[in-house]
Image (cartoon, rainbow, N blue to C red; front, side, top):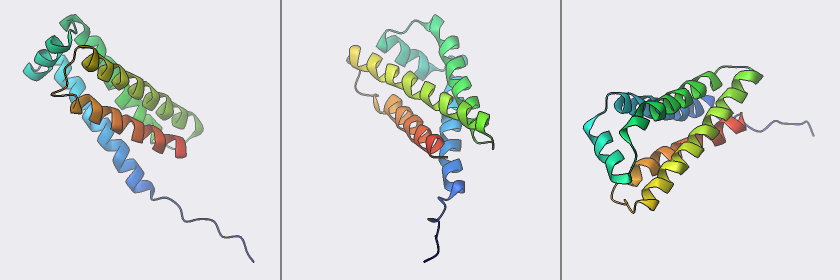
Length: 128
């Protein structure tokens, strides 16, 4: 019996899911840099100094950029995408921990959603 490869996973769907992660992280990085009211309110609620916002925005933007590079073909670019996804997973795990530590649960779905997207992007990048 001839060998038959399993059907290829639809790369367009994988790219779409990662593009969503890129977009939301780039968007929240811009909101951080613009010091949007909701960002300032959330930061104060969890005890995050406003002086940290530019650094955190840079990390989110770097994660988004790394995921974008990871969508390109190539061994090195795949590594960059995986590293970026790991960074975002760790970043948002920290955000979740900050919410739990501060007992701020009313809006924990936001860092939880970003965390879930980062985990999904990591799984997709690792599967490539």
